[in-house]
Length: 131
Image (cartoon, rainbow, N blue to C red; front, top):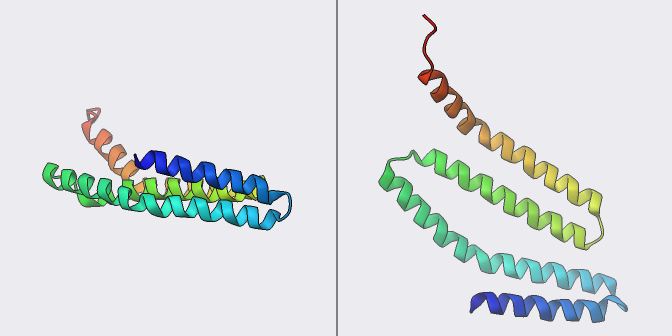
């Protein structure tokens, strides 16, 4: 049911944007940005529930919390970069949107380095010494 409400909000905002865009393009962009922001903020509560469940599972399985936190940060960076890029794209700034996406990818890579190094160390530890 909530998805229907979100789609309904999106459709109403789209119709309003199409009507307003001819006379006031700036208001149309602001309406699109605020609609996107409203949907994003609405979904944060849902994301919090998922994070709580994942933290509980990680605690019960004995996985160090630093790995889960890093993965959640990576997911957050991906969502925020995509959201920001889409808003900038709505304003017609494709080149800036692609730079936002690139920055998100770089931050994801930086955040992933500790996990990648643990995986590499584990693989090296499993290899025979060559003696």
